[in-house]
Image (cartoon, rainbow over the protein chains, first blue to last red):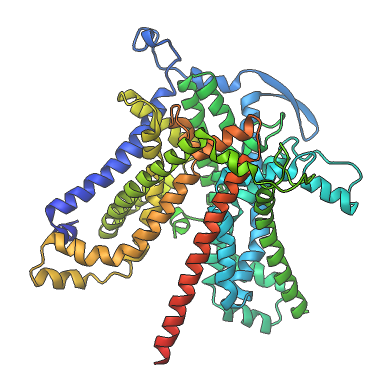
Length: 307
Length: 268
């Protein structure tokens, strides 16, 4: 700090501190504190706000447990509150999306880092960047067209004889997952690619010379080296999927519900901002908790991720 | 065996690229199909009427103008905030640094819905009504962190001795900033502005909760997809993909030219 003042003077340093303080306080910390505070307040008509009924309670959070539905878990029938169910399905399908993204992206990342001719790499990167720059809403819409009941995918499969009657793709969470994988896979690919390309190729060659089978080279050399990339890619894909609103809204079926959609219903349909705050806080808190636990299990630190 | 694995890898890479690009091609193709529903099957003849209808859509033009204005505002603010944050974080160390740095980075991971609702609630309590100005503030809160990362990376290669020399030779503080530090950072600031601009155009979650009644392009497309759609959206998609591809080609051409110049320079 002393150093900054010596270089840029008190005025400029003060200005920079003010700008950063505005960012962190007015755009990040205070809004989140407001969200947290509002989540404990009841939903009241404007005239009663600040009145005797405006007291703090956990009522908004307890709404999560309202209304139960029947479902089965491992074959055992159980009753679960609707919103709890939605939340767990959101987390579960986000995890599945993350795993699929990793499985699909890992060979590509390895290919780009170690196999491809370096001269064609810029072209590949460019081709990868085109879909990344196309708006998320359009990418979800593209799949909406492809997966439609009378759409091109069914026509193609009927034509080549793979199926004999059209398949309904947009059922349950199927289309949502297809859309999420397509939308967020590049957020897995790039961190993986960065991590693998910093691995010394000599290590792989040494292992090959010593007779290690290919899968063992990946398991014992490439993957451990790429761990920070795996971690940051997974955290990105998981948080983006769990927080996505567009893809589940466009590609969702009548039986699929994402937790962000529930939040939006409290916010825009019920106009109950305080309950929406409680739900939003739950989403933020539980996702952060989940990510922290997974990172702790795999012994990755936050500082590894931000590399 | 090794050869076979290599060929499989080439094949997989090609399949992956096709997987990424086919949906865009299908969407673009549907813009030229003379059918009321956006699809490429059955093909009912080639038409350009969806582009004409798009151009006649008033609401689309308003949304388009809003999107550009919001994106420009976000780019300007995010660049200022991100650059200041990078310079500041670069000059502190220890525990303080990791706490502030962690806070800055965490904004990228906060779900958009949470950012949107919290921004709306706080400014609402301060008496500021919802609208696109709040969308700008909400978007800046995490896009600034992306700019910060880009500028911070560039700062690593900065030689602070240049500033010392300038100060010794009698330059003012403002001159050191404007003539020495900022010119070194310009490539990162430019990249940051581009990232911020495109991130803002893409944004849906934050905008959806803070926009009040105003439309941006993503919100407009979203509402169209939900409430009965015509291929005008595909026409819009063709234009947007077209712009992206032209920008990508220009970037590639420029990169190749620089590479050639560098190679020639190395020979001489």
